[in-house]
Length: 462
Ligand SMILES: Cc1ncc(COP(=O)(O)O)c(C=O)c1O
Image 1 (cartoon, protein in one colour):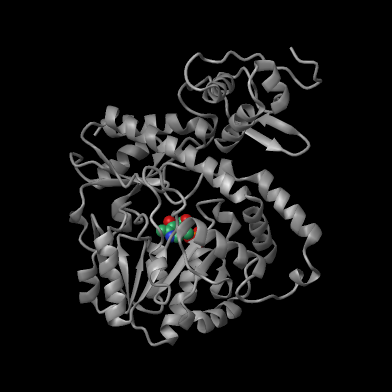
Image 2: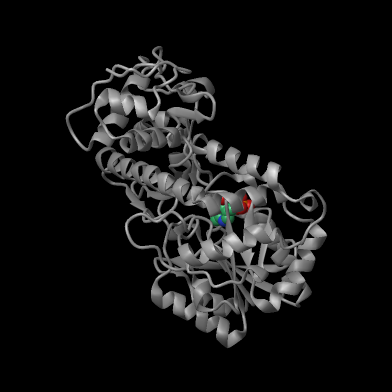
């Protein structure tokens, strides 16, 4: 018993695993089963630690994990509470409240878990910014973005991705998509006519470039972008995702990286490195960004769309010195990116909140990935899951399925929204068996097992 005045909680911890994992599971199960209803305030970490005879750190970590997974919310002033929509809907066992409400599960790629938005850290950073920011922040600023963020990013990107860049050569923009649009503008001004872009790739990105340049589809094989095809295409710019190809999930092999750099050196070509999910690598050490090997020819681009959420609309370009002036001018014409948000991100990085958030997310996504792999192995023995070393999506190959269209229809009939690989392909579609690009970050944690279950059951009917 404790003499604290906060709420008490009766919990029975399972006997297996670490005490932290056991506590997480006990809380999940109490919420899932409806014993802890939405809005219930939980004891403070100090009180629960003393009630259960655990260390306070163990309870704090378990709370953080469950906040990241969407079971709990943590707001300053109102403590830690059970999140809305987390109990299983009794009328339809196996389906979450969220899916029951919308009638569908979302396993499309491209989005992080919105339930895991770091509300507390973001609010703390934003409060600080609004209190402390100099008045000039409310006017027009440097088109490259706030120096506070460029300084924080230069050090963060060097530390975590091996990127070599001076804050003066960083341009903050409104996500990667804006960066790509600005690059298309600048390359056109510089007389570039053809850009080689990975095939498959995101259609919006292809169309964005195609508005200004001829876009050559460069196939990707198991080692990454095919540099022989890039050479043949006559492209002067290569746009690629070396850390984790989108959507195939291939990591560019060391020989292919060297070959690509040789291409840039021989032809004075530019490389655009889209490092959209480089922060999420699970089974091996992260590979440094390609930019670290040729900062003079590689435009490195990143974004908070996968790490925090697309709504934040922040991205950055580490700019080769030769492109700095025209890119800054293009960015000036497009207007500066939201300065208050820039300062908030700088603050999160400085306080270590960004790193902490990423560590929590990485753990959660890795667990989701493992669950996906295990579910496919046991439920669809003929299928293969590829591209799982990193990121928030995997390629699910279904060689024995009659067609990709049949796969998509079967998934949709099982109330699961998915994207077929064909949606991202421009060239020869027969290079790959029928496949789905499965985004495993989107369903809230409490409905994720049910979403996978629905997908597997749907595909088994094929
Ligand atoms: C391949 C790829 N590149 C870049 C991005 C990021 O784009 P943006 O920063 O405009 O949201 C995404 C999506 O998050 C993506 O899937």
